Length: 185
Length: 330
Image 1: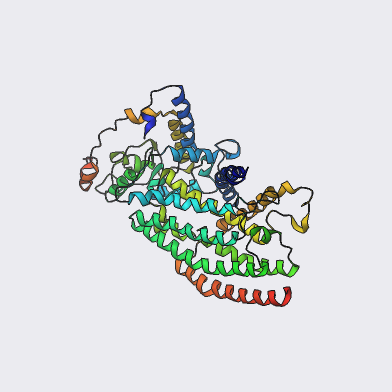
Image 2: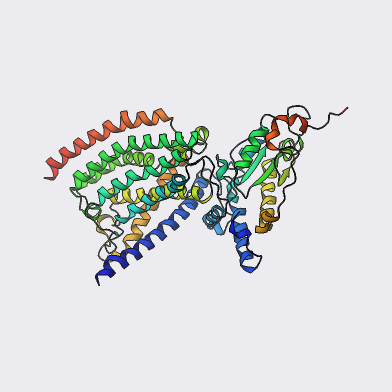
């Protein structure tokens, strides 16, 4: 993100990394949006029974500038894809993505012209959650997995990180038609 | 040793005060999240440290190590200035708030009251400039709402404050806290307290009057384009304002650093700051209680309430106070 990437690896940066990773684990603020029925389960995760605030994640921020985590909760239609992509671009690094439910992960039952077959076609995904929709426990488990991943990150992760080439550039998103899975015969 | 009294001691005391306030801000966020959780029958943050006590540390470090984004379409200088301008007045007000009998305010001026009003007037600039410089429709709308709301609620607030001044007959906050009041004065003040508290809620942009940052209409209002530590500064300003207004209310309505009936004022004079702290914590609980219980009004309802209800009440209150002062006190 800044100066810390230029530092050589050593004891000092390792200790700093531990602190920073710990803070990111405990203060992952999700972006406030929902796409489909999975959003209802996401809301339930924030409610009293499941209580996402135990992880310090109850501050759902409406502005992407303040959010750390994007929970793609539901199917992504071709019309919504540019919006999702743009919101993801507006979030500041470091940012994470949870693809919640089978639709966001791989298109689910909707193998048709309208639905993007998995949100990983347009943005990089850290954790996939199966289920239709996943129960709040599943989302909490995904958050737990994400915390484990955050704990292992190093500052150099971001220097050496080469994002896999996206199948489509965001500017060409009007042609998302081509993203859909080949129709079964 | 003039320079010692003039420079060194005030500087040291200001630094201590700022340190305490910033720590207070951090733990106010913890207090609020935990209390909201209890109001909703949840646990609240409990992963970071025992009882989630390190949660503010995690939030602060995370905000510091976020990428700093300055969007291309903003007015860069004003955009960067606005968060500082929002935070500075919140801290400046503390120059005149008396902390105890042996701990007078950093600047123990006889016009402390006017200082508070003047600095509170500057506070809205940070918000307005943030909204304007962000060059974003949501930000601008949030800033406009905020300025209109602050102007509307500053009127009844000012009139209520004038009433308090009429009763006390003094501008100094120390005298306001220490002046012996007759029993009817206390009752008359406490009748006004709920209305005053409503004005304070609107002034500090706290829920239920947090219309400048309503998520469902304006994304995040004036702070939409701010992320990372710049956003944290706005957050800080809002919460320190809560602490400040709580301290002012404690001083005006509940005797500030003194215990009721003058208990222990001779024996334990050093207790003053702690008593003030206790009163502030109780008043902050009130802020959070209101937030957990009441939904937002619409924006026009907010304005109507100020101009059609609070303003006439405050005018009437001021006139009655003046009459009471003339006939009962003199």
